[in-house]
Image 1 (tube, rainbow, N blue to C red):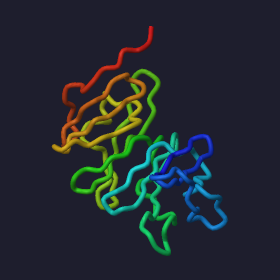
Image 2: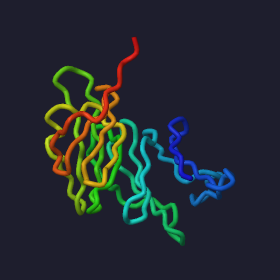
Image 3: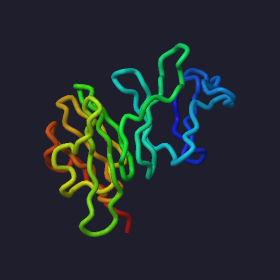
Length: 178
């Protein structure tokens, strides 16, 4: 089990059956430590179709990628999967293998965030997500039809976009506390 630890800025590593810490793949790393980010705290973890571990960072500018295959390179940091972001958040993969990344934390009127699509290493905006309706995309999930659910921390709803990045009716609304 891989766990993002915001408090320690690291990814922790446990046996899924016993809960015991596993040996760190990092040279000199303590037991249970898969990776120490050394910058922003890890937000979302996702395994890609390539079997590697992808890590976004709260208010970080990139999505890191780590080799998660057994062998000599296990645990090594690979090239960033996405860079130049303003605040990476949720991660998901489309059926064609494209990486989708929540990017931004809009807090003022008129500000928006976006979902970034990474296709063969090229970053672009996913549909019209940068035109409003997305403010703090903290968690993402692709559905069987390749539509995307976006948990938005600021907007108090779960947005729903089709496979082309066009908005559908909101999936769920969360009532703010009184």
